[in-house]
Length: 29
Image (cartoon, rainbow, N blue to C red; front, side):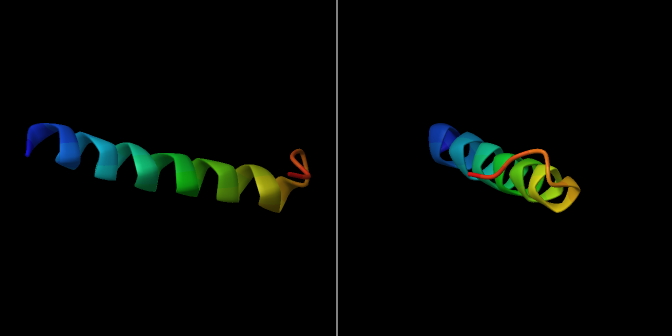
């Protein structure tokens, strides 16, 4: 349960982080 919650938070954080980078055009992947 705890691990699943942590993975969910990390997934959301990474997704938002990558989204912000993509918006600035610094990451093409």
